[in-house]
Structures are given as C-alpha cells and as structure tokens.
Image 1 (cartoon, chains in turn yellow, purple):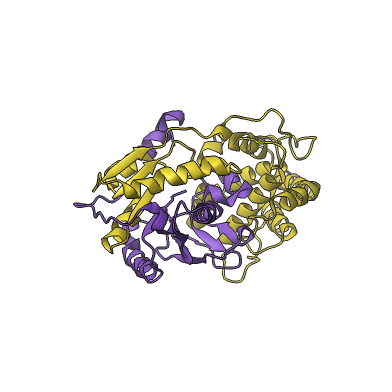
Image 2: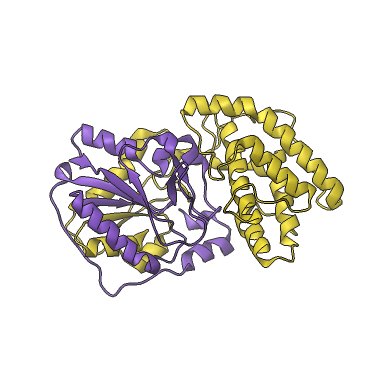
Amino acid sequence: MSALGHYIEEEGIPTVAIALVRPQAERTRPPRALWVPFELGRPFGPPNDPAFQKRVILAALRLLEAKAGPVLLADFPQDDPREVPDPRWKRPIESPHPNPPPQAGEGMGGGFLADALIAELAALAAPYARSCAARGRTTVGLSGLSPAAVADYAAAWLRGPPPDSPVADLSPVLGLRFAVDDLKTYALEAAITSDTRPSSRQLGDWLWNESASGTAIHALRRQLADSADDRAKLIATMFLVPGLRQRPGG
Amino acid sequence: MRLEKLPAAQAERYATLECPSFDTTPWVEGPPLARRRVAIVSSAGLVARGERPFRGREADYRVIPGATRADQLLCSHISINFDRTGFQEDWNVIFPLDRLRELAAEGTIGSVAATHYSFMGATDPREMEGAAREVATRLRQDNVDAVLLPPV
C-alpha cells in the first residue's frame, strides 16, 4: 500500500512498501518499494518457506539503508516456486460432486445443491480437522458461525425463500457473504495437507470446478444476481465468486 | 504480480486502477538495519478473531499486538480476487511476524515493534490519511524507525 508510505514517512518514520502491482507503485511514487512477482495474496511469496520469505523481507528492508531516494523502486528477482502444481496433491475427498446443469429448475436444483453442500461439509470434517491440527490454526471464522451453521445458512438460501440473518447486526445478504467466505475457507483448508505443496490454482480448480461447495456458491451467485434488490445483486456479483472463476452466463 | 500472466482485460484493469499521485515524496533516513525497530502496517484487512471484520471500504485500522498468535489472525479484506490459500497455510505469507522475530533474534534487525497495524486496502487511500498519521504517532511512541508496508 504505497500511499501509506507517503503519510507515515511525512510524519518522520522511514517506510518501505511491498508492491504487487508495479504500475500502481510507479504512479504513487512512495519513498521506497520492492516490486515482487508473486500472485495477489502472497506479498512474501511461498507459504512454509522461511528462507525465501526472509529474502523478500530483507530485500525490502535493505532499501531503508540505501541513499538513492526520494523514490526507490526495486524488483525482487525470484518467482514463487509454489506457482508450480504438485502432482502428489490429492483432493480431500474422492467422488467429486457432479455439477448439475446450470439451467436446472431453481427449486429442484436448489434443494439438490443444498443437500450436496451439507453432505460435503460433513465429509470434509475429517480432512479439515487433520489440516487444522497440522497447521495449528484455522482462518475460518469471519462469520462468527460454526461450520455447520454456515452450511445450514447457505443451504437455506439455496432452498429459498431468503432466510433471516443468522448474525444480529448483519443483513441477510451480508450474512451470506461472510458465511460463503467461511465456506470457501473451510473447503480450501480441508484440501491443504502438510505433505504436499499444491499451487493456489490446483486448490481453486478443485473448489470451483469439482466440489459441491463451489457448485453451491456458483448457484447462489446466479440466484442473487437475478434479485430485484440492488444491494443483494451487488454483493452476489462482487463478493461470492472470484472474477476469474465466474462462468459465462452466470 | 506478473501482469503478463493475466488475461489481457484483467491485466489492463490492474495496470490502470486509480491510485493517488503525490507532488513530492518524503525521504527519512535512519540507523543501520541492525539497530532498527521494525513494525508491519498491512493493508490486508487483518482482524483478530472475534473483532469486527472490515465490511466495506472503511478507512479505519486494526491494532495487532506483537504477542498475537497465528491462530488469532483473520483476513477480512473485502476483495475476493486474490489468493487466500497461502495465508491459510502460513500467516507469514501476508503478515511475516515469525520472520521478523527470527531476524531480531539473529541480530539482522534491532527489534520488533510492540504493536502492528492493518488497514483494508480496497479503500481509497486518501480517506486513510488521518488514520495513517494517527498510526504514525503511535509508531513513534513505540520508537519504530522502520515500517514494512505489505499489500495483499
């Protein structure tokens, strides 16, 4: 976040930004920035590679010792080795869920997907628990709901009509957005194991193209994109399915 | 990020995304790294578990005490168009507190700040100016003289 560098350094404290999008740093011209070639979401590169991460941090911090300012934009030379898929990685559960036809009748399709979602979450419980134990943590939790409550709430939307919000100060649609955040996180964390090194694309391909969770989220997006409620429409189109994973026509 | 790896339309969107420009750039020098006190000011929308997540383009920030553990930190950046699996696997991908502690222990940096901070980077940075200056005041009180600014 290059602009923050201006504000904080103007107050007398030296700063160095990590830049993922080089043209933005070129325009904002912070005191110092290190451009890194990694994908968005990984400013310090590969997970569980302390030596690599440390090289990135030091490449950035060393710019603080340079006398070359007031604008210093350097490039980090190495790509993230975790962009390469790991053929040893396996889906967390076998028997991938068959995608129902996108044009399935809303009532029938919704109920089918809701059941599949709840069944998949139950099947993912064991791999999710193993994964959490190995990593010592989970990042599920933005909705404040339990995983079962998250699945039930998303399922209720699929079955229709729109349910009440499960969280006191969130609208039903915002509640759905946070529930979907947790749903994605739960499934992806279940797919992360300590003995393989999958790329983000491998994990995303499974979630969005094969899993019942992904199929359900695609369907929720389609369902709400047709809503007469502009706010529901906005949240559904922007905050459920990533742009690159959206399907033609839906 | 290598924009050339993205579909052309998306690469164009990132390359031309509106961002503020500044007439001048400040430049403050300091002691060698081995004597610096380092803080992280992230724009990943990081929040402690149970804390209110960022819900929209909010310009405020969250305080992340230096004693925060990996199992307490969540990412509530409102954009869903970036990878989260790296952070799920290892929080250092976004918030490298373990690495800073190691660099301090081995003497490469002087010390790690008592407190770190997070904004939510989808907000127009110009709206963050007041909060950013407030964070600078808090950093100064903690004797910080090196700020690492990771995006997400």
